[in-house]
Image 1 (cartoon, rainbow, N blue to C red):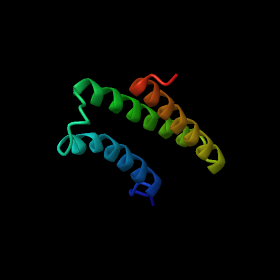
Image 2: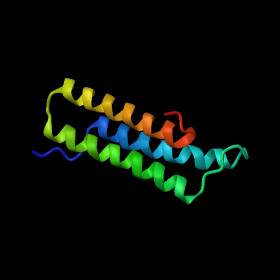
Image 3: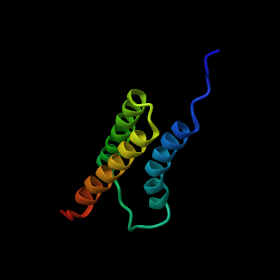
Length: 91
């Protein structure tokens, strides 16, 4: 019998991406220090959704947990590096 319920890690990953995209929108309602426009949301969405899709592809291709964790860590670090550089030009 085919399993129809998505694994918990997939729900957690896509839910986490959705929460990360909603946090600035919520923060903008309470403070003037967070001022994102449509381009900022588009950039963050493209970056996070792209990383999620790359991880989905890697998880589909690799069944070993250690490879999935390694690829996941590399993607998180890459997203943080790109985000930090885009936000304040750290690098």
